Length: 573
Image (tube, rainbow, N blue to C red):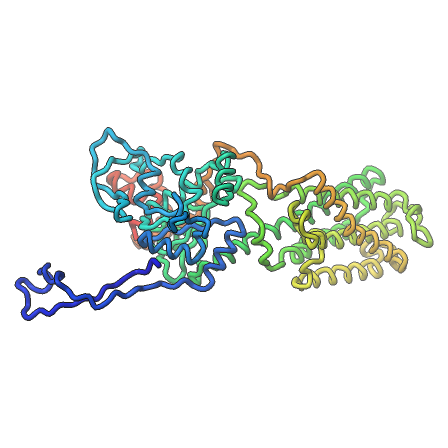
């Protein structure tokens, strides 16, 4: 079962040995065994379920541990990191699914046979563990780091699930290698992995998240796309090197972080989808009105109200939806997936076209509108019934389109799930959305019926028949959304979420190239120098700048590296 064991034994000793109890090695011989205790560190009940949710969401979980290989395999099996299909007929994991750090280190780095052998860590299959013995030296780059064999690494990492007897440098190698991997470009290899092992390789560069609590985990936390440090057991160095701190040290919190992250991204997408539709329609009609009548059919006050609907109220309505488990039922979007997907673009253009056609009809030929008695006369001027009716239709179209903007379906879900066509799904769980919609509709009634000349509308407002027409035209946008969905299924067999853009071979993958990361790193180092040398933060920044440019006089290169190296926080700690 992979338990840790503790043996209890004794023997009778009459007199104290010469040299004391601690120096006589014969005391450990001839013992009588009393028993062997099996020690288990039980998993939290929430861990297997959290890992299952990760797998469903397209997040592969790998375990790097200092435990022995047998113990690590037993733990990984218990929490479903190793699936039943990952084991061979003999009951052991398949090749490259579980290995020690020494074996991993030996396989993925280039060695230099021209150099004399040195004593280093090597995997011994006889004892299934690492030993120190003579072996070939690794090739080193100009910075003294081992040279990674990316081809050999790419043969291992897609199936690797457990890395036992893992050292910090093994964890760092795994992070850097996965981030640089281009296995997803090898379609035959990806097809083989899926056919033989049921492993799906995400069709883009890997986004790597790492958890850690010790000082030695800082380099891996820093080099990962997302670093999670433990808030309770984590050291200060690990917390400084990470991006997110888990306050409860619970793996299930990572699932919540992924769910909230996807919810934030989707909320932004919903708001952009709604706002761009309003912008396209408002600008188009303002330009048409300016060229045709030398003034916009929407007055300044009316445009302010439209902006309030479009910005403040819409952001409250669309960005306040709580995350649901449904967000974990899809694959990740990928690093280079555009924020405006094909389906979003279809929704924006489709609703913009519908609204422009309806509003142009109202603006230029209102007397031909059906179901209105008496008909509205063509009267292209401010505060007329024609333009008051135009303004009300415009707002009703935006209000009902806000329901459509709540959903961000994928082509796959539109094909397989009828509930994805329902824009009212889950609306009752978002009270803020309901409040905003009711408030906006109420204020629109007050403005149209009682605003009058103050808001450049006709005094007395609209009658019941005209209001019913405005609401009906706005509500038809819900039906129009179905036509857009059908268009998507015909012309976009797979959505942008399912088909990734071709990768850029020379794309910079390191987050350290961003200006934000450089600024954040500078603040952290300046604060560290300020505490260590008891100097103001301003001098800490100055010291940081000098160290980065390597212009400190009188300091040797080795000492300068102590400060300048990316993992300096580990050694300072």
